[in-house]
Length: 248
Image 1 (spheres, rainbow, N blue to C red):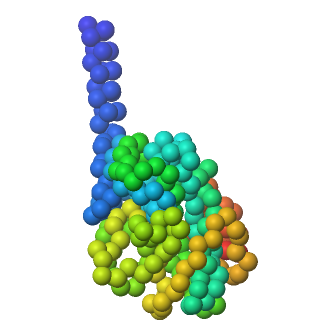
Image 2: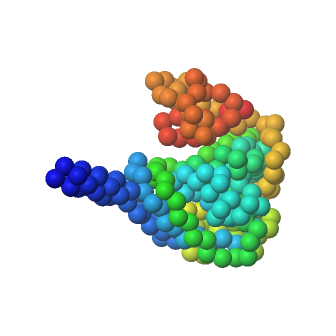
Image 3: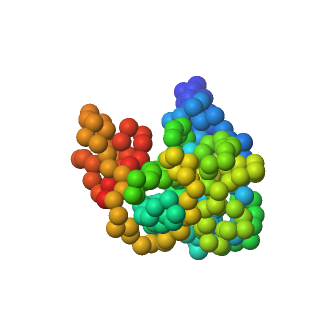
C-alpha cells in the first residue's frame, strides 16, 4: 500500500512538473501578444526565415551562445548597436560583437547568417518577456532609435534591411512595402529626417551618445546587457526600469 501511494505521489509530481513547462509558439510574422506569457518559463517554438547575410533579430526570450550557434550556425555573427556619429546627411552605426553573451530578450541585434536562405526552426526552454526593445543614441542633435518589434510595423519613416542589401547590413527607408515583420528590427530618426546610414563593425565610436539623467536612476536598479545588476549607471549599455541607455 505504501509503495503504491509513493508511486502515485511521484507520478502526480511528475505530471505537475510537466504541466509547468508549457509550449508557446511565437509568430515571427504577425507577432504574438507576450503580455499573457510575461515571466513564464516555456518550451518556445518559432520559425524564423533567415537570408544569407545580415538579418535583424529581436526575440521575446533569451538564447544562450550555444543555442545561437545551434540554430544559426557556428560561423554566424551577432552584433549590438553601441553608438552613432555623423549628421542628417550620413550617420555611422557602430555595431559590436555580442555573440559570446547570446541573445538577450527584447534586445535589438543584427545577425549574419552564413547558410542558404531558409526557415530556421527554433525550439528552446526559456523565459518569455513582454516589453520594449529599443536603444537610442544621439549625435549632433539627431537621435537614432534602433527598435525591435513583436508585431508588424508599417510606416514611411522607418528603415530596415532589404533582402537585396543583406551582404552590407545596409538600412534603407521602407516605403510602399508591407513594413517590418515581428521579431525583426528597424531604425527611426527623431524628427523623421532622411538619413543615409553607414554600418561600421567592431569599431568604437568616439562621439557622445545618450546619457541617463539622474532622475532616471533614482530608486531604480541598474543592469548591464547581460542582466547583471550594477551599483550605478556606468559606461556601456545600461538597463534602467526596463529601458536601455548607452553612456560614453
